[in-house]
Length: 453
Image (tube, rainbow, N blue to C red):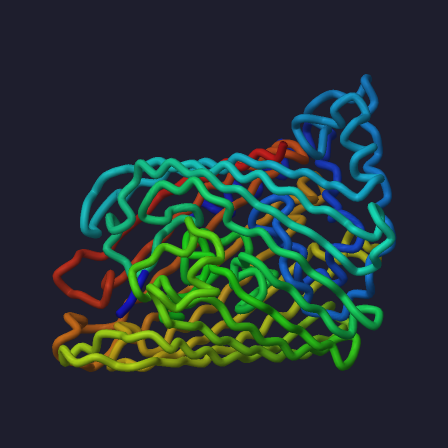
């Protein structure tokens, strides 16, 4: 069962426009102690924490955010709400970091697909991170809570594709505590443990250089069945070991009740601690190794997952449990400068692959290739442009309804209007949506706007 050519002209125009005004957008920096590698430089939402791929020692006490001068114009604020008259930087010096964002997405199926119409959706995200070292002297301890609220006036299936064509469409409205967990690092970051309600895609199948693509397959393989990610985050336990500075082995097990019809994203830990309504579990493990060469940073990783729940087969029988594997690689091929502020910029490429049992999954192999370039010119040092191709190799099962493979192509330009506001036009083409020749190839145009508060 499955749950679910004008770019160069625009690019040149933005560069010339920025150069004519003689302005540039200031670099955005991650809070200290959160990330050790530029491979985690792309964050889906402000404040959202990705599990590090490199060994990260227990962070030093938070340095307070630089107070915003009253003479600083709002378009230079890194967060649009500013420093709250000094209160925000004071809270961060004590260990409490509060982040919020509003993401809005409009998209339209211009031609083809299942329905030629437009849709709009938005997502509010508010989260808080508490550094227990700064607060109470507990080195390596972190508490994190994330609340999400979305209003989805779109139609998830309009394109006819296997996955959504934007990053905040969940098929329903949500108002929920998406994550609430405690993390502890031991032995200067050699061991990291986390327990609570977790978005598994922040720990596993993480590709740092793909974060700005909107096509759903870029972030999560379509055949990672019952994957506990938004809006189906789940209670679980995660353990990572970092044998060397640039290698890791991690695993976790989670409440698998989503497969039994229980929406874990909107619930607490009850089903994790009780088998009364569900006895399903989700297990996942991943290992990877990174490096730094003359071109920049790189990494390869592979993982395995197993779900103990019951899954419907295409032959109308039931499968007790299913599993799959995945692999990924990413490499920086050009870095414009040597300073830390330049490390996340330049030319990046990534590849991803996932496999699932095609007696159950409509997609046997999900393959993706992407290229991004951040810092497109001197006048636009934080803008990002990207190209992505995805191939969904469908099952041969005659009862699946699939007839051929699906291909998706995406191109985007993410323009940082200010350090806290971006606008991202996006164009996608889907050939053979859902692997069905009865659905016309789809052209989807979208615009996403993000504001960090």
